[in-house]
Amino acid sequence: MTRFALAALLVLATTFGFPNPALAQGSQGFCPDASGITVVVDFQELGGSTIVRCATGDQATGLAALKNSGIGITGTQRWGEGFICRIEGKPAANSEACIDTPPARAYWSYWHASNGGAWTYSDKGVINRKPPAGSFEGWSFSLDKTETTNPPPRVAPVRPVAAPTTTKPPVVPPPGAPVQPGAPAQPGSPAQPGKPAPGTPAAPGAVTTTTPPASTPTSGSASASASVGPSTSGEPAAAPSTTDSATWSGEVENTAAEDRSNSPVGALVGAGAVLLLAIAGGVVGFRRRRAADR
Image (cartoon, helix red, strand yellow):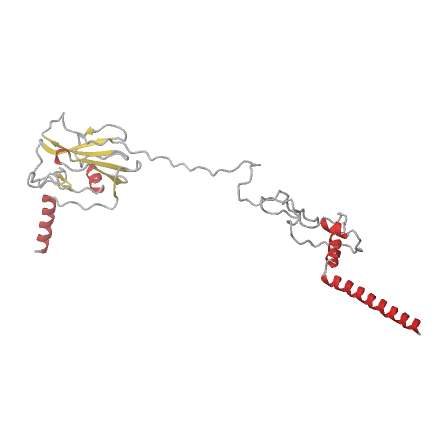
C-alpha cells in the first residue's frame, strides 16, 4: 500500500503539474554576466507582469534553465515536462486540462536569443536544446496566432551594462598655497588681529615694571607733573616704553614729589614750624624786656 500511494502521488504531481519550488540558484532580474542564462516569460493575453529571472551557471537544457531560474511550470499528463502546459499557473485549469499536447491556437511558444541579438523561434523542444552561456531563453503565450504571427517576448534580449563607478581623487592644494582660515600661524608670521604679538607694548593704563632711577625732586616738579596728568583732548595718553635704552625723564619721581607737597601732613608740619618759631621769638623778646627793666 505504501509503495502504491507514493507512486500515485508521483503520477499526480507529474500529471496535474504541481508548481516546482524555486531553486536556490535562481535570482530575479537579468544575469549580470555571461555565466548564466536569462529566462524571460511574457504572459501576453493571459495578463500579468513579464518575468525576468536568471539561472546561474551552466544549464544542460532549456527545461533546466527554466526550472533553475525559479519559475514554476506544469507539463502534460501524456508527455510530462517535454511539453510545457502552464507557467506560474497560467493558463488556468478550467481553460486547459494539460492532459495532452496543448492546441496550436493556445500554447506557450519557445524562443531563444544571444545577448544583444534578436528573438528566434526555437525549432527544437525544451529538452533537446542546450542554451549557450550568457544567452536568453524566452517563453511567450500564443493565442489564436499562426506560425508567422506568433509573438516573441516583449523584452529585448540585452543584458544591462553596469555603470562604471568613478571615485574623485581628493583635492590637494598646490605648493605655496595660502593657509586656510583657522590654521595656526607659522613661526615668524604676524599675529592675528586682536591678539598681541610677543613683545607688544602694554595697553594704555597698564602697570609697567620699569623701576625709575633715584633722583632729587626739583623746584620744577609742579610743571613736570603737569605733563603726566590726564590730557583734556580726549585722546589716550601714550604708554611708557619698556625698552631699556629709553632715557629716564624723571616724570614718575616728580609726580611723587608733587603728591608729597600737596599732602595735608606737609601743610600741618609747616604751620607747626611757623608757630614754634613765633613762640620762640616771643619768649626771647619777653626775656630781653625783663632784663632791660632790671
